[in-house]
Image (cartoon, rainbow, N blue to C red):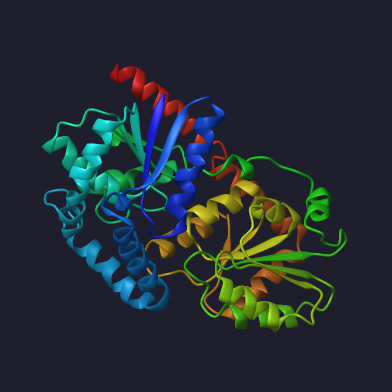
Length: 373
């Protein structure tokens, strides 16, 4: 089968979920194409939309929180939002693409394409099965105004929330958030530390900056490093942020126990090598860490869906969180000092997160296509 995966460049989590599904499809012998839907109107559109969203979240998170709450206030399954009206403008170029290429189904880990596809069902009579994937541990505003064949959600405890907003219960499938197959494999920590060139006998913290920032990460890392007095290793992954990578390398160039990295394809290996991770509560990144079984300390969430993510994880014992930097670091130290706490958290992660969600989504696609035929 040939699957179109539609994402949108508003945060890396959606794209990562799309890549995860693509990898799982290809490992099962299927074809898949991953596309940023906004690119159908040109690179300028995807740059403007993605850039505006990311800048809003990074630099004015309170404003983003206010917009999110406004969305919560006006959401309804009885009427269409301005978000829907904006996204239906992408219907014509997307329909042209579908006419030019033959796909068997469409997957979207993002609300915006789901809005466009909903309009296309009415306007053009779109018949292809459409599977939406929620990448946060909550029903974000406006999912309820979409019409997809299935809604893959992170956990069965969220079924009532999604159904309560008007999504038909029979369409809700609690498979989980898909992660790349690299995160599904488990290697011994000793081997992973060898690959990462870390001392085999020293505790190690992993600090993830995230695609939308980590607040004042240099202050957080500086305070954490100053409290690592027993030879603890600190690995900081800055991703594609070259300025941050350069600045932090300058900050810690005299400290041999701090390792600053830029973009790396081996995030999964570093998770295996480390004992505790500090990360923002993004739905995808938190799921990746849980699949890897690394104890999580969630740092300050962006108001909105990240607040819901951290609430879900802490409620189910899959992470700990705190409001201040000092308390977050203290929580990490407490985990590092207690093998029992770390093991309890790993057990909770294994219970509540489906590591094979990506391959289960492939099975759902196969069944949906067979049913449609």
